[in-house]
Image (cartoon, rainbow, N blue to C red; front, top):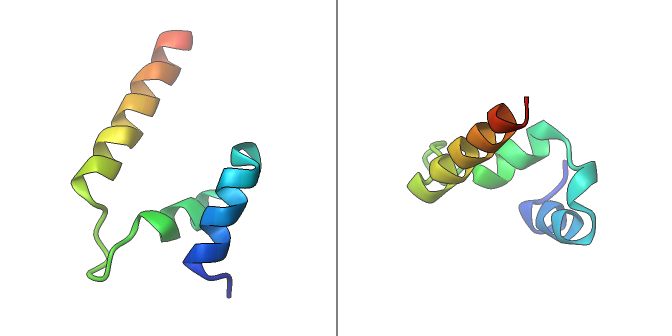
Length: 53
């Protein structure tokens, strides 16, 4: 199993080649919930993608 630190390093090295499952693992905190700023970032990304269509 890949550690969060390794996933973050891979994200910094090449943000286009990260699996969704790995991204979700990084976003989870100790209680298994996303942090508020992470939710806002995901929503902003969705809005950006919707604007591209």
